[in-house]
Image (tube, rainbow, N blue to C red; front, side, top):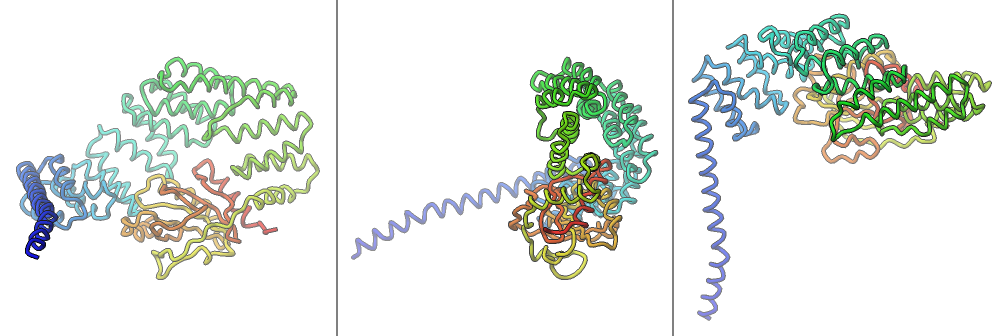
Length: 510
């Protein structure tokens, strides 16, 4: 019996030994971490004006640890004249898109009114709060405190795009002129070209971009030439050929996209020449050679060219049907106009085109995956998709820190206002709950009209899945069926969104 007890005790000891070692190792690791934090803390106190030491310290502690704020409160008392101290913790919060950044940023600029990056931080944070006027004011302060900074000059000019188009254009041109050796100068012209509504303005700006910022040296200029090419491909394919040939000469070896674009432009130019000669069948044969990438902006133009070729060849019904198929995939006013023209040529009544479009959309409609129990921000209670049956639903996924979301909202708003008082519900599902504190102030400050809801983690989204991204948009009909998905809206496509909503407003399920 004694032998058994001894052996059992030895077994216990053999199993207990690693636990003791592990505990000792844990203590060693904790001690090591504490020693490292002590070194980082000492580094801040030795040089409180250095951003790098603050970044190292805040990263080591983590913004979720309450000790971080307590320590910075002590340091702000110890170094009351150092603007970098409050900025150090503000930067950590700002990088994580945390609402806690603002008071520390305000303390930094109160100490140093010429602290450019602190003003810049307030600008970014102000956008997340939806306080766009204050945000623009902060951006002006950043620009004034450092006129040589191309970043703030560019963003300050861009901030006027939706409130004063003429001022935005002039300021963007000034940025390009003032910073001829910086990517921001090229970026200013890029967005001017992309967002200009008139064809003549687009052509002029893209040429200025090409001549002022060599595409071989500036990324924004290189990207701008792709946009320029698409415009020329639609309007002046012969010039698109020339542009593509010139770009191919300087293209980097690993990319080699422009030779294919030369061929594309040559095909389009040849097809258009045949269409001008009323050779529809020959033009169609040429157009069938055209291979477009998945994300090509020329798909709608190609559908229109093919329909024109069919019509000239005597297959007007084929042209009509093909455009209805294209419209169901990518709705646009240009397609709708062409469909109406062919409908008239076929002797169809004006309303028949709408009926035929709806028949196609109706056939592809799916019941939208329902959501339930999403928390409302502006009122008490929860929301479900079923609450909005009988209404058309414009649904967008967003979060306050999402710049592209904030860029799209004004265009949504321009369209949604046209349906005020009608059965349209505009919903915005916030996918980042850590930014909840921003949401209500954002709604009040921005004046946007969507109903904000909070997403649920691991919710089954089905055909309303945003895959963790934002913005992602959907349109659901009055019966709760998904009709349009994964579209974007900007200054050039507001009419397209309005058309989609009108179709759903007037639709009747078969």
